[in-house]
Length: 252
Image (cartoon, rainbow, N blue to C red; front, top):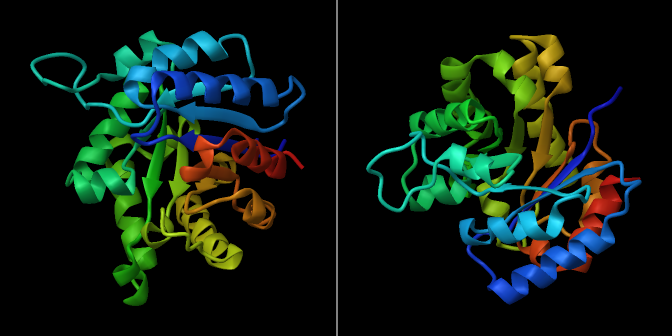
């Protein structure tokens, strides 16, 4: 059996209670019971209970955009993995480029969060990717390998049986630029080949999503590539019809 595609929406810090409820309802209505693609949404923390309320019983699952590596304690303003699990979350995004760049999350912290997510019974969506400067310097593979290796050193390659990887070229997030399907495929193939050197079965089974200005208009061509198993969708996940068109592209 092949890898089941996954399309996950990362809402980032967007929305209101009313707008979120309307978006969740539209996504639920647009996803039929016969959908082959797995569909997930990751709202801001405050709207996760709303996601549970609206989506429970539908094929759509939900998750958090981040989590703290600790299980409990004096960490004002933070959210633990078990709290996400308490609201029936399936996924937790870890290592998103915005967390790495804007909040100075180093590889070791990302590895801790990945481990914490799994300990709480969540499936981490591990984000890796290079900046424009790193790509232009020919460092794409080195950067992605370093980011992966931090997680593998802590949790082992076998942990990827219960994880998802998302390749997000930082230069193509929110910029309107998109890696060409071949550029994306090349990095996805590099990731899978590198993991295959450690465990072929794990590498063959792990889902690797593309995240970088995916839209309904380019999703099909991206998802046609052999090592691209879906998308981590940013801005387009805030518009129900656009998000649903991406799901349809993955469902072909």
